[in-house]
Length: 85
Image (tube, rainbow, N blue to C red; front, side):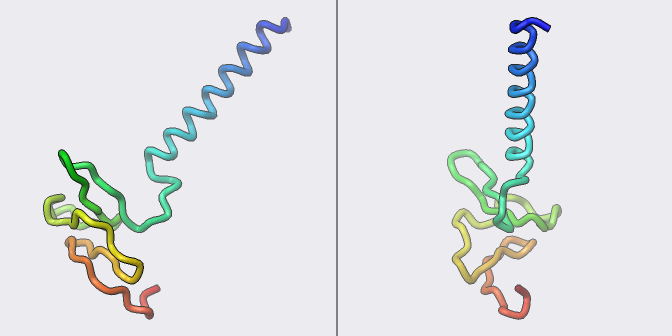
């Protein structure tokens, strides 16, 4: 195998690894937070992973919950009970 062929296969492998990382990031694999920011025009709504699909994105908060708060599946920010953690 020539050096040119080796470089071609190395380049293809690097591109495939980078594309896999980008896809995993886009799917939220690296997101440790229990919610995701969903872009909605000029602002974002913070939506939990266990969102109720019958509730509109407009009903979710436009600000992140605090350190001792969580977003319910219906879109309210509520305090976290220590027993739930």
